[in-house]
Length: 249
Figure 1 (cartoon, rainbow, N blue to C red):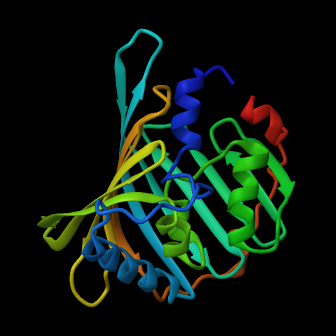
Figure 2 (figure 1 turned 120 degrees about the horizontal axis):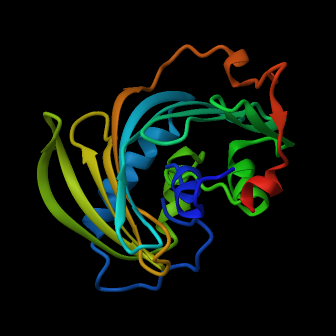
């Protein structure tokens, strides 16, 4: 692959904050109202046996020259608990597909037909941290995909506040701001019956080489009909396999 490392990081950091962080101490900077909004959103996602959504991101990627380059990737995500996930990344970024079916995880570049394939743990909860550890691929929205999203994010929060009410794409939302070790993040949560995330901003504060990202979520479906076969990766006849380790390097 000839792309600079920082652009590869933009793709692999496709969609939040690291989950494996120390528990946050009790602090007056943590507003319980902000946590309550976050908990309701997480419960909405946790209660869905499957869901799909689309997203469009703005990625501000630093370059060796010191100038930041702005990219506009888009994604489609399909999840079926407890062991199926598919992600398709398109737009202004290298096309990238990810498949997980409870047995294997596969990354596929449809433009070059290069792919990586590896055995994977039997659940999404086990697969996501293993994927990051073994391959370096981190989905920025990964905590939203866990069976207990609130447990994935709340334990690392050191600051939480309510910014206020606003509207995202015509939808009334609560704008919340959080801090965790090494990352500042904001989330806009739909007000009403569904409590769904509508916008997410992530700013990694301890690594200048990681991009600042804004993700806007659309077309949420909490009751999709998903065939199991869409989570299976089929090797292309003219494809080339590249080990995950090589992708990370």
